[in-house]
Structure formats: C-alpha cells, structure tokens
Length: 628
Ligand code: COA
Ligand code: AMP
Image (cartoon, rainbow, N blue to C red; front, side, top):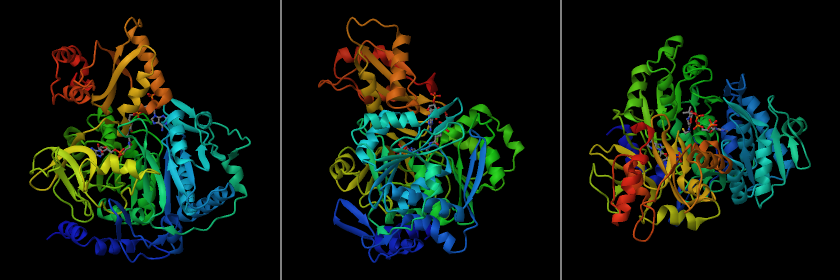
C-alpha cells in the first residue's frame, strides 16, 4: 500500500487519530484531546477543546524558534515599481503593533474587521493583526464595487475597516477611499473607524473616523496574541452563490491551522526552507490559504506579486519572478497561463530566464483545459498539477499529492481525493453512480478540518444551500465523474455560478442589475466559453414593448451599471437583445438549456413550440468567442 492509500484509509477509518496526529504540527495554548465534535451534526466542529492563536502559529513561533531573520514575505510589484523583503522578525513587529492599533480602535475577541486592500504586505499585516486579537477578518477583493462592499459590511458588521489609498491596475490607479466612503454611505451598519494605508500614488485624507495607518503605527503599543477556542472564527470570506446575496463562508481557527500546516508539504511538497508563490490575490480563498496562512504557518517564504502575467511588462513576468527569487513552487489559475500562451505562444521569453528552481506548477480556480496543460508541461518541463477546491473547502478536495505520493497525471483530472475528503458522484436521486458516469460531485459528511463549519450568522442557509439536496453529503455545486482508477474529473458548475478568469461570480447578481434597467422586461445572464478567461458572462435581454434604444447604447448603459454595482471584475461586456427567452411551462427561464447550447451540449428541450422557436432564434447568439 502506498503512502497516499495509507493516509486516505487512515483518515477515513480513524479520523480521530489521523487529525490529532496532524494537529501536532500546530502550536496550541491548550492541545486538543479530541478531533471531531459531531454532537450538532450535520454541523461539525473540529478540535472542540483546543485553544490557540493563529497569528502565533504564522509569525511568533518562527521567531521564537530562532528563524526570525528568514524572509517571510517577498513583495514584488511591477505596477508600483516596488520590491521588498520582510523577515519574520519584521513581520512580528508590524503585526503586533498593528494589533495594538486595532485594539485602540476597540477591536476585541470576536469583533470583525473588513479589509479592502490591494496586493501589498500591509494587507497580510492587517489579516494577521486581526487574528492576533482573536478577532475575525473579512477581506473583500479590491475589484468589487461599493455596493458589493456595502453588502459585506452589512453582513459582517465590522468594528473597523482597513483600506489603502489606492489599488493599481495596468490601465489606471483606483482611489479606494471614495469607494469605501460610498460603501459606508450605502450600508446600514456603520463601522466606528477606517484605517487607511497611504501609498505613494494617492495621498491619504484623514477625517473624524478615518485614520492614517502610518500615524497610528508611529505610537502603537505591540499587542500579545490572544488565545481563542479552536472552533472560534478566524475569518469570513464572501463568495458568490446562486442568488445575489453573497455567502459568508466561515473559517475556524483550529481546523484551519491544522489543514494549512498539513497541506503545504503533503499536497504541494513545500517546506520551511522553500520559496512559494501563489499568484492569486488576498481577496480570494487561494490568497487566504496559500499566500498567507499555509506558507506562514509552515515558516516558508511566501511571494506577493502585484501585477499581471502579461503586460507588466511582458509575458515573461512570471519567469522573471521565478528566476529572481528562486521560486520552488508556483500556484496560479489556468487563465494566467493562457494569457502568457496567447502573448508568447512559443514561450520564447523563457530563454531569458533560469527557472531551474521550479519543481512544479500548480493550477486551480477553474478547469485546467488540456491545451493549457500540455503547453505548460512542454515549455516549463516540470509536473503541472491540477487541484480542485473552492472557497467553502479552504483547501484542495482533489489533487495529485506531490509531497505525500506523486501519481501519474491524467490531463483533465485533478487526480484523486485528498485524504479526509470522501468524494462521490451521485445522480439526481442521490444514488452513487458507477465509475465513468457523470453526476453531481458531493463530499460525504463530515468534511475534514479547515472546511467551512457554517455560513456567517446563518446555519440554516448553510444547511439549505449545501446539505439538503443530498442528505449526508455536502453538495459542491460542481458536476463531473470519477473514473475506474479513482481519478476525479470536474466538468463544470451545476448552478448559476460562473468562473471568469479564475474569479467566481454569480449570474444571479448580474441579472438583478441588468433587470433594473428601465427598458428591460426580462433577462438572463449565462456564462459562455472564452479562450482566455475560460468563461465570460453574456446578457440576453428582452425589451419592454415599445422600448426604443440603439443596441450599442443599451450595452453601454448595462455594462456601466454592472461595473458600478458589482465591479469591473464581473467583466460583463456583451449584451444581446432577443425576441424572447425560452421558458418552462411554469415560466422559469431555461438557463440550463441556454448554457447547454452555448457549450455545445443541449441538455433539455423546451416544453412548448413557441419556446422551441425562441430558442432557435437565439441559439446563434448563445455561443462564446471560443466557438467563433
Ligand atoms: N481592483 C480593481 N479592478 C480590478 C482588480 C482589482 N484588484 N482586478 C481586476 N480588476 C479589473 C481589471 O482592471 C479589468 O478592468 P477593465 O475591464 O477596465 O479592463 C476587470 O477588472 C477584469 O479583470 P480581469 O478579469 O482580471 O481581466 P484582465 O484583462 O485585467 O486580466 C488575466 C486577465 C487573465 C491576466 C487576469 O484575469 C489574471 O491574471 N487572472 C488570474 C486570476 C487569479 O489569480 N484568480 C485567483 C484564483 S487562483
Ligand atoms: P472559488 O470558490 O472561487 O475557489 O471557486 C470554486 C469553483 O471553481 C469550483 O466550485 C469549481 O467550479 C471551480 N474550480 C476550482 N478549481 C477547479 C479545478 N481544478 N478544476 C475545475 N474547476 C475548478
């Protein structure tokens, strides 16, 4: 029996033993004597009697172990023309003082801190300082507009918001303070203070409740770590669901620390002496887990890159980074590789750099298409490892376990379930299907440590959204199959969530914005294939009778309101006026059928002749740019 099979069996048959062993990688103020608490099933808790501080695990313990001079964070920003190395000693100083700042502003155990920041080290400092106080952070991706930020402020009711004066995109500098002010004006809950980190590009504007980060830090008293229960929340991360209201995924302290400590070595084969780069953003789950917590808990060096794979300055940016920092493992979304491939199809720029330090390329966040896989393998000459997971799980559900036991790669599959995840494919009735048969991918409960215990303040929504369709299982929302060798294939979402350039978005929230246009009678937004971004949203609208507007004008207005209400990241650029939308007898729009036709696989037929006619009329408009 190989190491993978042994670990998977042990995690399945004796989870108490398996996870208490894994928990030894974490420093506890009170070590847990139990792993799983199933007393409130189907809501599960891990390490119910453990007590720890996550920031202590990510920072202090490395300094105490004599590794303080080791580089914790390498920051490289072609957009800000800045580079910095931050040692664990320096990180401890920054984090403990910023925790002092937050404490002075009234943040205590269990209070929330919303962090709306670009990819700068201070975002990590703010996250860790919050954790240090036993408080709960909620990082909001900088590409979201004020209305989305406001929705998160209302749900999380933070004591403090931490932001910066700007984010930087290749085409523009985005002043954040006006966005935060607009969000606070929109929200019902009003935070008591905002702390703004001034960047050289935009000066800070202080006010009655708005403070300058630098000024506060100048007289801040360092704050010690506050131990919390393992089951206490560490963070809330909002993610898109089927409806417009984002879901506040909760992460606990203990289970999360254990999963983060266990996975970096076992899944990604990265240890304390390695340099690791997750080319994501702190606003996404990949950023939380693999830019911040996992590498820092392990004591490795983590790389923060504020730039794009292409155009900052060219398609050699990633190779320059690997060369310059001797990076051992790179994790990014397939979109990033597709962007590089599009600019430099023969990877000619690789010749300018030495990427021999790289041991593997990890891909996640969206489906890794075989073309991209083969291109990366051929040019980089390292294993290219697909891993599948989601905000809710916090770490990989299925992967090739590079540290535990590397396995043969099958292009199109993220390989096998990670030990602790009992993955199955079920049909519409919840029956497990045979190998090779497509269905809904589910995970048998309980899921392992590190996965969401619930949604913020809404156990019932957690149960309704994930645990009810197939009792005994967590529904991932992804469809796919498992082959005879046990390899998992993820073929796409079964709900209205779409994945645009590795960014998870809800078509439901886009539809709400499109439908609010005064001339729109009804609409549907579906994801269509796109060669660069994987999927892009396309809006189909039926105009109110008698409405007169040029299609270009309508498109401009709708695109603008999507950017204003959701954010540029929604990337909705195409609006198509159609005579009607196909519907079921009860009047529900046949989005699945529309999606199926767009993807070249019609799944259901409309029930009326009229709808067949509608569908025929709009079918040529459904296809994505990937299909010409
Ligand atoms: N703040 C403000 N705006 C942002 C933003 C941020 N943090 N991130 C993206 N945007 C804006 C972009 O400027 C762009 O605006 P535009 O329509 O005015 O040009 C829009 O949102 C869409 O952004 P994006 O989808 O990222 O497209 P892009 O053309 O800027 O870049 C890629 C394309 C493929 C290079 C880029 O999407 C990429 O690197 N993707 C990888 C995603 C990733 O790491 N995901 C995490 C999961 S692992
Ligand atoms: P997010 O919560 O933003 O991480 O998005 C999670 C969703 O992205 C999953 O439910 C999948 O639909 C998709 N996804 C993530 N990783 C992969 C992968 N390796 N293969 C296919 N789809 C993926």
